[in-house]
Length: 125
Image (cartoon, rainbow, N blue to C red; front, side, top):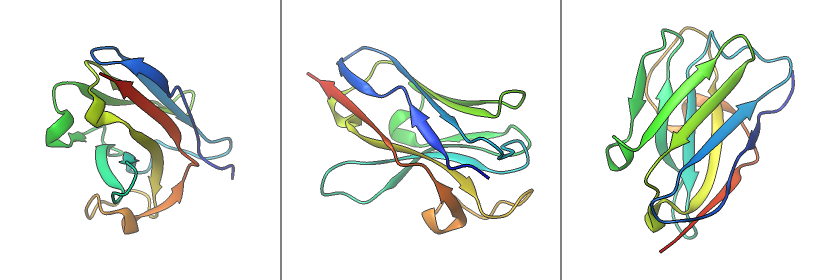
């Protein structure tokens, strides 16, 4: 099974949009909880958005209304649509896959067994 690979990050201005993608050759996303996390310099990695195998989604409060998580099962790709970006959204963004299929406990990082290398998102004022 391949590693998770994120793409789509970059340098944008406040108010702009970005769409992050995450793929993994050989992995099946549809049976697992998938998540997006981010880590800013000097801070802990934090949950941003998650999608369960049922397609139920959860969004962290600080990005609710601006970020949307979705999944293309046919292409085994996870997305994070980020609109109205703010400087406080600057971070490395990671996608992650749950350890166990068809199970959900919480969105703590320890529940996720597979991680990508991250993609940098920088938002200037």
